View 1 (cartoon, rainbow, N blue to C red):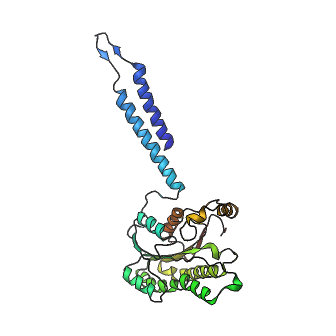
View 2 (cartoon, rainbow, N blue to C red; view 1 turned 90 degrees about the horizontal axis):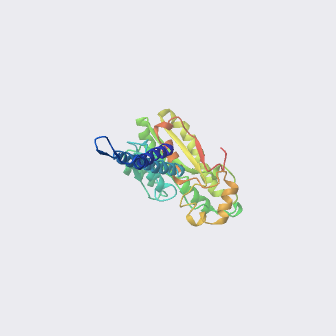
View 3 (cartoon, one colour; view 1 turned 180 degrees about the vertical axis):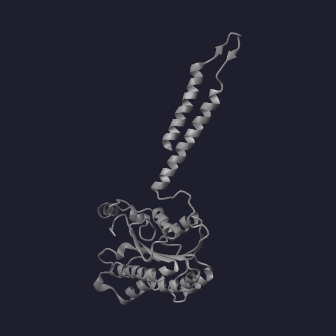
Length: 295
């Protein structure tokens, strides 16, 4: 499109130059002729070409930033996003809404046993559940992990899942349609020092998704997970972390992509997994981490 715009601009310039080159002439009857028609033609071509180039450049920038072109793949879907104010919540709400979904953004605590059922009941019909769960990752050495740390981490990241699933699945089974996506972590797929508690909890999430995913697949319900790391988000990679030169060196050393995965890139993939185009995926875990883990 950029090449076409440049070509149109060139044609416009040629038309304007032709006006000056041709100049005025007097015919045999003494009538003055000037090629004024070339002026509006040249001006129109210039404007059209410039617009084409600007639009093409804007689309190119959007693609590089992971901002998709308008393509409402979730039109008519009611999507419940938990903890919508942290982790991937804000960008998920933005991207899913742009794809036509009706967003039910919930920021209530899920720590109480009856909280998930109450949230689901209040939401009404739910076509898609996005379980977005996050806490600051503990970095305690394995030999020093306390009972409280272990319990609290699993209470925040693992315990809400079966409660949420029990609340949304009966209606999905009745309709023979539904999608559940868990925003998990690639920390469960690659060993890291001083993350035993966090990695174990994230691993439990993925194991639960794989089991339930194959169990409910026959009801046309797709349950999957994104296992992410090195994805731009305010919970785990706030601006002050990203600005640290040591972190930038770590990115280049550990992440083949050489940069953080864009928040919109991640959210666009999540939207795809929650769309009808992804009906073939059941009980699967998709790493989104710039190649930090290969599977």
